[in-house]
Length: 119
Image 1: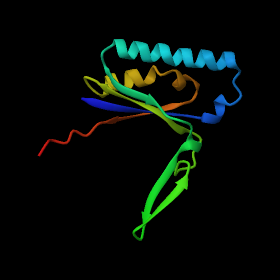
Image 2: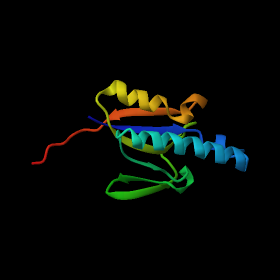
Image 3: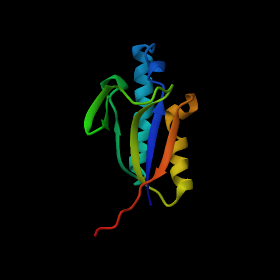
């Protein structure tokens, strides 16, 4: 079954990092991603630009409304995702729990991908 692992973390927590700390942070993620890819379970994954680059779209009375940034004001922001092929929810949770940011307060939403049959 396919699962989407949505990566949430506090963007502001990285603002004060030195170049060395940022390099170590990135290296940790690269090692995690490499292990995930080598496992054969990772199908796709991307990091997202920071939330100030986002645009939220809504439709109100047949009029398109655009808002800069994400819709919700939260302490954690969606920073990226992975799509994986897991045997079950337990395996998806196992990979989510290994993500480097989880140990420092970040979170991962694990959600099954809805399989829609071809018509």
